[in-house]
Image 1 (cartoon, one colour):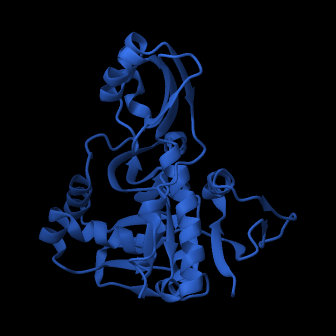
Image 2: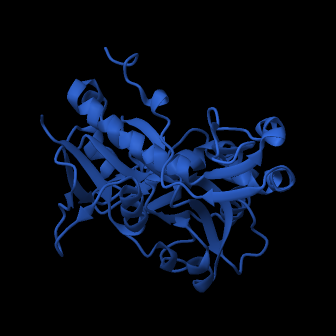
Length: 327
Protein backbone atom coordinates (compact mmCIF):
# COMPACT_ATOMS: atom_id res chain seq x y z
CA UNK A 1 0.00 0.00 0.00
CA UNK A 2 0.95 3.66 -0.35
CA UNK A 3 2.63 4.94 2.80
CA UNK A 4 0.72 7.15 5.21
CA UNK A 5 2.51 10.50 5.46
CA UNK A 6 2.72 11.68 9.08
CA UNK A 7 3.90 15.23 9.77
CA UNK A 8 5.49 15.92 13.14
CA UNK A 9 6.29 19.42 14.41
CA UNK A 10 9.48 21.35 14.98
CA UNK A 11 9.97 23.72 17.90
CA UNK A 12 8.56 23.39 21.40
CA UNK A 13 6.17 20.63 20.26
CA UNK A 14 8.98 18.42 18.94
CA UNK A 15 10.33 16.83 22.12
CA UNK A 16 6.97 15.87 23.70
CA UNK A 17 5.75 14.62 20.31
CA UNK A 18 8.74 12.28 19.92
CA UNK A 19 8.25 11.14 23.51
CA UNK A 20 4.56 10.38 22.89
CA UNK A 21 5.32 8.46 19.70
CA UNK A 22 8.00 6.42 21.45
CA UNK A 23 5.64 5.70 24.34
CA UNK A 24 3.12 4.56 21.73
CA UNK A 25 5.61 1.93 20.59
CA UNK A 26 7.27 3.68 17.67
CA UNK A 27 11.04 3.96 17.33
CA UNK A 28 12.15 7.25 15.75
CA UNK A 29 15.63 7.85 14.32
CA UNK A 30 17.12 10.51 12.10
CA UNK A 31 20.37 11.92 10.87
CA UNK A 32 21.44 15.44 11.80
CA UNK A 33 19.79 18.08 9.60
CA UNK A 34 17.41 15.48 8.11
CA UNK A 35 13.72 16.36 7.91
CA UNK A 36 12.66 12.78 7.18
CA UNK A 37 13.25 10.64 10.29
CA UNK A 38 13.07 6.89 10.16
CA UNK A 39 10.31 4.98 11.92
CA UNK A 40 9.91 1.29 12.70
CA UNK A 41 6.60 1.07 10.82
CA UNK A 42 7.27 0.54 7.09
CA UNK A 43 3.80 1.82 6.24
CA UNK A 44 4.44 5.28 7.74
CA UNK A 45 6.61 8.06 6.28
CA UNK A 46 7.60 10.83 8.71
CA UNK A 47 8.24 14.45 7.80
CA UNK A 48 9.32 17.26 10.18
CA UNK A 49 7.53 20.53 9.46
CA UNK A 50 6.78 23.76 11.27
CA UNK A 51 3.55 23.41 13.30
CA UNK A 52 2.20 26.51 11.52
CA UNK A 53 2.38 24.67 8.19
CA UNK A 54 1.05 21.27 9.20
CA UNK A 55 -2.72 22.08 9.17
CA UNK A 56 -2.43 23.50 5.63
CA UNK A 57 -0.38 20.57 4.29
CA UNK A 58 -2.78 18.05 5.85
CA UNK A 59 -5.81 19.94 4.51
CA UNK A 60 -4.34 19.96 1.01
CA UNK A 61 -3.51 16.24 1.13
CA UNK A 62 0.25 16.72 0.99
CA UNK A 63 0.32 14.94 4.38
CA UNK A 64 -2.24 12.37 5.43
CA UNK A 65 -2.01 12.99 9.15
CA UNK A 66 -0.16 15.41 11.40
CA UNK A 67 0.51 16.63 14.91
CA UNK A 68 0.23 20.37 15.47
CA UNK A 69 -1.14 22.87 17.97
CA UNK A 70 -4.82 23.71 18.30
CA UNK A 71 -3.81 27.36 18.03
CA UNK A 72 -2.39 26.81 14.53
CA UNK A 73 -5.47 24.92 13.43
CA UNK A 74 -7.60 27.90 14.44
CA UNK A 75 -5.19 30.35 12.84
CA UNK A 76 -4.97 28.57 9.49
CA UNK A 77 -8.67 27.66 9.47
CA UNK A 78 -7.67 24.43 7.74
CA UNK A 79 -10.37 21.96 6.75
CA UNK A 80 -9.15 18.80 8.51
CA UNK A 81 -10.50 16.09 10.79
CA UNK A 82 -9.42 16.49 14.41
CA UNK A 83 -8.83 12.95 15.68
CA UNK A 84 -7.46 13.44 19.18
CA UNK A 85 -6.48 16.00 21.78
CA UNK A 86 -3.01 14.74 22.75
CA UNK A 87 -3.14 16.73 26.02
CA UNK A 88 0.47 17.87 26.12
CA UNK A 89 2.20 21.21 25.42
CA UNK A 90 -0.50 23.21 27.19
CA UNK A 91 -0.04 26.90 26.33
CA UNK A 92 -2.09 30.07 26.48
CA UNK A 93 -2.42 32.71 23.81
CA UNK A 94 -2.63 35.99 25.71
CA UNK A 95 -3.00 39.71 25.16
CA UNK A 96 -0.10 41.44 26.92
CA UNK A 97 0.80 45.10 27.46
CA UNK A 98 3.55 47.04 29.27
CA UNK A 99 3.46 46.63 33.06
CA UNK A 100 3.55 50.39 33.48
CA UNK A 101 -0.04 50.66 32.25
CA UNK A 102 -1.48 49.77 35.64
CA UNK A 103 -4.91 51.23 34.93
CA UNK A 104 -5.45 48.94 31.92
CA UNK A 105 -6.59 45.44 32.87
CA UNK A 106 -8.63 44.26 29.88
CA UNK A 107 -8.96 44.54 26.11
CA UNK A 108 -11.92 46.87 26.59
CA UNK A 109 -9.78 49.16 28.75
CA UNK A 110 -7.06 49.14 26.10
CA UNK A 111 -9.43 49.95 23.24
CA UNK A 112 -11.11 52.78 25.17
CA UNK A 113 -7.76 54.29 26.24
CA UNK A 114 -6.41 54.50 22.69
CA UNK A 115 -9.73 55.72 21.28
CA UNK A 116 -9.80 58.49 23.89
CA UNK A 117 -6.22 59.51 23.00
CA UNK A 118 -7.07 59.42 19.29
CA UNK A 119 -4.14 57.09 18.66
CA UNK A 120 -4.20 53.91 16.55
CA UNK A 121 -3.63 50.74 18.59
CA UNK A 122 -0.74 48.62 17.25
CA UNK A 123 -0.74 44.90 18.09
CA UNK A 124 2.11 42.57 17.14
CA UNK A 125 1.24 38.89 16.68
CA UNK A 126 1.87 35.72 14.69
CA UNK A 127 -1.88 35.00 14.86
CA UNK A 128 -3.61 37.42 12.50
CA UNK A 129 -6.84 35.45 12.06
CA UNK A 130 -7.25 34.41 15.70
CA UNK A 131 -6.51 37.99 16.79
CA UNK A 132 -9.02 39.43 14.32
CA UNK A 133 -11.76 37.11 15.59
CA UNK A 134 -10.85 37.91 19.20
CA UNK A 135 -10.98 41.67 18.66
CA UNK A 136 -14.26 41.58 16.76
CA UNK A 137 -15.96 39.55 19.51
CA UNK A 138 -15.19 42.27 22.06
CA UNK A 139 -18.24 44.45 22.90
CA UNK A 140 -16.15 47.63 23.14
CA UNK A 141 -14.59 46.98 19.73
CA UNK A 142 -18.09 46.42 18.30
CA UNK A 143 -19.37 49.65 19.87
CA UNK A 144 -16.41 51.70 18.60
CA UNK A 145 -15.82 50.12 15.20
CA UNK A 146 -18.83 47.95 14.35
CA UNK A 147 -18.11 44.94 12.13
CA UNK A 148 -15.04 46.44 10.47
CA UNK A 149 -11.94 44.26 10.33
CA UNK A 150 -8.78 45.55 12.00
CA UNK A 151 -6.05 46.48 9.54
CA UNK A 152 -3.69 43.51 9.05
CA UNK A 153 -0.19 44.45 7.93
CA UNK A 154 2.36 41.98 6.51
CA UNK A 155 5.42 42.45 4.26
CA UNK A 156 3.31 41.34 1.30
CA UNK A 157 -0.13 42.84 1.77
CA UNK A 158 -2.41 45.02 3.86
CA UNK A 159 -6.09 44.29 4.33
CA UNK A 160 -8.89 45.37 6.63
CA UNK A 161 -10.58 48.76 6.82
CA UNK A 162 -10.17 49.76 10.49
CA UNK A 163 -6.92 51.73 10.68
CA UNK A 164 -7.62 52.57 14.33
CA UNK A 165 -6.57 49.02 15.29
CA UNK A 166 -3.66 47.45 13.39
CA UNK A 167 -2.32 43.89 13.59
CA UNK A 168 1.32 43.61 12.55
CA UNK A 169 2.50 40.14 11.53
CA UNK A 170 5.36 39.04 13.80
CA UNK A 171 8.02 36.52 12.79
CA UNK A 172 9.03 35.69 16.34
CA UNK A 173 10.45 37.50 19.38
CA UNK A 174 7.04 39.14 19.60
CA UNK A 175 7.60 40.12 23.22
CA UNK A 176 10.45 42.42 22.12
CA UNK A 177 8.20 44.61 19.95
CA UNK A 178 6.71 46.97 22.62
CA UNK A 179 6.93 49.83 23.11
CA UNK A 180 8.68 51.01 19.94
CA UNK A 181 7.10 48.73 17.33
CA UNK A 182 3.84 47.81 19.06
CA UNK A 183 1.59 48.89 21.91
CA UNK A 184 0.47 45.35 22.76
CA UNK A 185 1.13 41.79 21.71
CA UNK A 186 -0.92 38.63 21.30
CA UNK A 187 1.44 35.74 21.86
CA UNK A 188 1.79 32.25 23.30
CA UNK A 189 3.06 31.75 26.86
CA UNK A 190 3.84 28.65 28.90
CA UNK A 191 5.13 30.10 32.18
CA UNK A 192 4.99 33.85 31.56
CA UNK A 193 8.70 34.25 32.31
CA UNK A 194 9.51 35.82 28.94
CA UNK A 195 6.79 38.42 29.37
CA UNK A 196 8.11 39.21 32.83
CA UNK A 197 11.64 39.65 31.51
CA UNK A 198 10.37 42.14 28.93
CA UNK A 199 8.28 44.17 31.41
CA UNK A 200 4.99 42.97 29.98
CA UNK A 201 1.88 41.70 31.72
CA UNK A 202 -0.93 39.49 30.35
CA UNK A 203 -4.35 41.06 30.71
CA UNK A 204 -6.59 38.55 28.90
CA UNK A 205 -6.42 34.99 27.63
CA UNK A 206 -7.35 34.76 23.96
CA UNK A 207 -7.41 30.94 23.87
CA UNK A 208 -5.77 27.85 25.33
CA UNK A 209 -4.03 25.31 23.16
CA UNK A 210 -2.63 21.78 23.28
CA UNK A 211 -1.12 19.40 20.75
CA UNK A 212 -3.69 17.67 18.53
CA UNK A 213 -3.72 14.85 15.98
CA UNK A 214 -5.35 15.82 12.67
CA UNK A 215 -6.05 13.95 9.43
CA UNK A 216 -6.88 14.71 5.83
CA UNK A 217 -10.53 13.94 5.14
CA UNK A 218 -9.88 12.24 1.80
CA UNK A 219 -7.17 10.06 3.38
CA UNK A 220 -9.77 8.85 5.88
CA UNK A 221 -11.94 7.74 2.95
CA UNK A 222 -9.12 5.56 1.58
CA UNK A 223 -9.68 2.15 3.25
CA UNK A 224 -5.99 1.20 3.53
CA UNK A 225 -4.83 4.62 4.70
CA UNK A 226 -7.74 4.83 7.12
CA UNK A 227 -6.68 1.58 8.79
CA UNK A 228 -3.12 2.84 9.30
CA UNK A 229 -4.30 6.26 10.49
CA UNK A 230 -6.51 4.53 13.05
CA UNK A 231 -3.53 2.42 14.14
CA UNK A 232 -1.70 5.69 14.88
CA UNK A 233 -4.78 7.10 16.61
CA UNK A 234 -5.27 3.97 18.72
CA UNK A 235 -1.68 3.90 19.94
CA UNK A 236 -1.56 7.63 20.72
CA UNK A 237 -4.95 7.55 22.43
CA UNK A 238 -3.57 4.70 24.52
CA UNK A 239 -0.73 6.99 25.62
CA UNK A 240 -3.17 9.79 26.53
CA UNK A 241 -5.40 7.41 28.49
CA UNK A 242 -2.40 5.67 30.06
CA UNK A 243 -1.27 8.92 31.69
CA UNK A 244 -4.59 9.04 33.57
CA UNK A 245 -4.71 5.45 34.79
CA UNK A 246 -3.10 3.14 37.33
CA UNK A 247 -2.96 -0.64 37.03
CA UNK A 248 -3.33 -2.22 40.45
CA UNK A 249 -2.89 -5.79 41.66
CA UNK A 250 -4.55 -6.65 44.98
CA UNK A 251 -4.38 -9.82 47.11
CA UNK A 252 -7.50 -10.30 49.22
CA UNK A 253 -9.09 -12.93 51.45
CA UNK A 254 -12.18 -14.62 50.07
CA UNK A 255 -14.43 -13.10 52.76
CA UNK A 256 -13.33 -9.60 51.71
CA UNK A 257 -13.54 -10.13 47.95
CA UNK A 258 -17.07 -8.79 47.42
CA UNK A 259 -16.43 -5.67 49.54
CA UNK A 260 -13.29 -5.00 47.49
CA UNK A 261 -15.11 -5.37 44.17
CA UNK A 262 -17.77 -2.92 45.31
CA UNK A 263 -15.03 -0.40 46.11
CA UNK A 264 -13.18 -0.60 42.79
CA UNK A 265 -14.36 1.27 39.69
CA UNK A 266 -12.86 -1.02 37.04
CA UNK A 267 -11.99 0.07 33.51
CA UNK A 268 -14.20 -2.78 32.30
CA UNK A 269 -14.42 -5.76 34.66
CA UNK A 270 -11.66 -6.72 37.08
CA UNK A 271 -9.69 -9.91 36.56
CA UNK A 272 -10.11 -12.26 39.53
CA UNK A 273 -7.76 -15.23 39.97
CA UNK A 274 -7.55 -17.74 42.84
CA UNK A 275 -4.12 -17.91 44.49
CA UNK A 276 -2.29 -21.13 45.35
CA UNK A 277 -3.34 -20.77 48.98
CA UNK A 278 -7.00 -21.66 49.45
CA UNK A 279 -9.23 -18.75 50.46
CA UNK A 280 -7.12 -16.09 48.73
CA UNK A 281 -7.71 -14.23 45.46
CA UNK A 282 -5.77 -11.84 43.27
CA UNK A 283 -7.69 -8.96 41.71
CA UNK A 284 -6.22 -6.74 39.01
CA UNK A 285 -7.91 -3.78 37.37
CA UNK A 286 -7.30 -0.30 35.99
CA UNK A 287 -8.47 2.77 37.90
CA UNK A 288 -8.37 6.52 37.38
CA UNK A 289 -5.08 7.88 38.71
CA UNK A 290 -6.75 10.86 40.38
CA UNK A 291 -9.00 8.49 42.40
CA UNK A 292 -6.17 6.43 43.88
CA UNK A 293 -5.76 8.46 47.07
CA UNK A 294 -9.54 8.41 47.56
CA UNK A 295 -9.60 4.61 47.23
CA UNK A 296 -6.48 3.93 49.27
CA UNK A 297 -8.20 3.81 52.71
CA UNK A 298 -10.64 1.14 51.47
CA UNK A 299 -7.83 -0.84 49.85
CA UNK A 300 -5.73 -0.60 53.00
CA UNK A 301 -8.57 -1.88 55.18
CA UNK A 302 -9.81 -4.63 52.88
CA UNK A 303 -6.79 -5.89 50.93
CA UNK A 304 -3.76 -7.71 52.22
CA UNK A 305 -1.30 -6.73 49.48
CA UNK A 306 -1.19 -4.04 46.78
CA UNK A 307 1.08 -3.52 43.75
CA UNK A 308 0.68 -0.38 41.63
CA UNK A 309 1.93 0.16 38.05
CA UNK A 310 1.73 3.16 35.77
CA UNK A 311 0.72 1.71 32.38
CA UNK A 312 2.55 2.81 29.25
CA UNK A 313 -0.73 2.68 27.35
CA UNK A 314 -4.37 1.79 27.91
CA UNK A 315 -5.91 0.65 24.62
CA UNK A 316 -9.71 0.63 24.46
CA UNK A 317 -9.76 -1.46 21.30
CA UNK A 318 -13.52 -1.96 21.12
CA UNK A 319 -13.97 1.82 20.89
CA UNK A 320 -11.54 1.96 17.96
CA UNK A 321 -13.28 -0.75 15.90
CA UNK A 322 -13.77 0.56 12.37
CA UNK A 323 -16.35 -2.02 11.36
CA UNK A 324 -19.30 0.32 11.77
CA UNK A 325 -17.49 3.42 10.48
CA UNK A 326 -16.53 2.43 6.95
CA UNK A 327 -18.43 3.36 3.87
